[in-house]
Image (cartoon, rainbow, N blue to C red; front, side, top):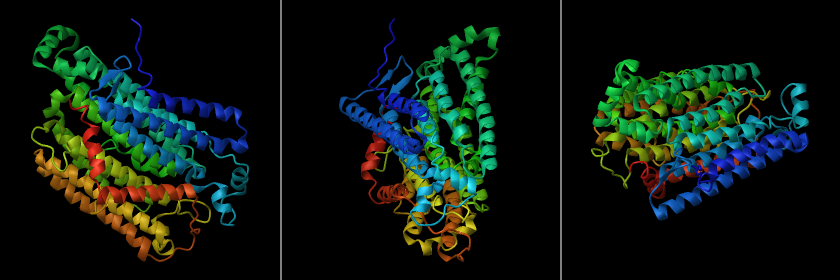
Length: 537
């Protein structure tokens, strides 16, 4: 039979993929003097086009109702897919804007605008003057974004694995593209590659075991095999080849879960996060901390709830334990960090635990009746990730503004007096840190309120108590940064603040979005309710 591919519904993924290919072509044909500018414009235009296609399809789906499994059963075109794609593309635009700052503010334009000599070695200054920046970063980001769009929308395990690899392989290269601290950056890239390859192999092995149990790669097919009648048939045909079919099922569940939780960055699969975030260029750290987490969390939700929902009583408790471990490690180790990027890395680990608080009771929605404007556990997770993404993206944007005279990223002590000398940037950083801490009138507070309330009503009151306790601990290291910014002693080797219009635009949008979600969350909660309605049918 002739394959049926819904190209119009796949337009967001295709647009990003085509944009990435055009970026590769531009590397070969565009003169070096114009290459960086062309790549930035092409990446922005690609993501805007993909976002327009996504919003158009989402609006059409809301008017017509229903959803379908398309692309020969590979992709789910439902409300969840479009909601996640919208979130990914909006946050991806922010990451591209940060990368447009010459990879962490190292370009000549930012320094030349202030009349100060470009920092760094003579070779570094010559390279910047010649406009020889890493322009290949943009097609790599677009390739990774294409994988991020496929991963959470996949409707079978093979497509999910393809999306995971398309997502991951460009990131391994991007982590090693820091212009300074090259050895640290390349070490981070190597660590991420080795551990990422191992997690992919584990994920693939889990896929094989689930296929051996169910005879299907499709999520719906695996779910159907978990019914009592289907399980009896599987027991009869599995026989001597596989031994106990339950062993295949539970081993496959464990291995697939490990592969997914590695990408989410939770304990005990978190060891790569601090080193990679600290070693990678700051825009890439922001891209990974936000977009990779959004894609991985919703891929985890779709697989656990759609494919393995019949095993809810098996995976709920281990997932709750992982959530607690992530909150403990992220909060405790965050208190000891002297580097702002490592501090944000442990913040990411802690927030991964907080996100899981909203996922754990997802399969007990009959108990956790929707409240707070109709949100259920999964739509609250979507809202939470949006608030977390804005605050984290904005925080990394502010990090890009603080540099030593040599252009290096200083330790936390260099932030002393930053808020006094630059009150606008200091106020923005305060908003982002307060949101990450979950302080009222910010998006982070509303996200935690929704997730924790629904988890409590879903019967996980003990998990909510633990989450609240470690939210207070994480607030302590955010408060430490704020204290250093406004009351610390002014350091000696920090350059005056320099930032382009693009960087300030990212900061402004993230700050406005964070405050809007905290003060007037109603319109976004309405979107959040529809974000997972299709997947839950």
